[in-house]
Image (tube, rainbow, N blue to C red; front, side, top):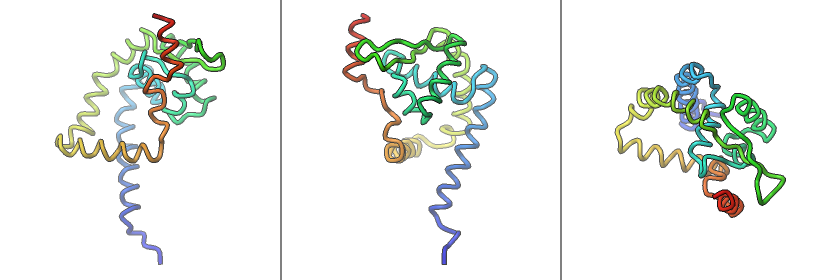
Length: 167
């Protein structure tokens, strides 16, 4: 007999409810800044990456979008002047998405409210020692289920060569 009162189901359900609830709390601040959830995720990942750019393939891996999906997002953000594409000097097949000053400015406009929402509805609900343990647990789970989630976080040899040429 299958038990529907299984702690694994409870854990997954609570996680899903918390995640969707947090997304709903963030949605309004993103919308006020003219950003979708994926727009924000794309911009913040670029802003927090070395050189404020990522190879398109790494951006796709980090956001869990398909390569065509990330291309559509970058196309839209590029039309809005929030990102630019940059050619890869070492691999003609690859290109980078880089955040522009306008993209950085858009993030700067939305971050104060977003951080306040995070504090109110997420991190501020946990004492510091619980938050540290929780973050470690999330990294463990993330690394197991999405090993590419930090793709491009460490500059590759090709990215280092490109950066050296540009300086």
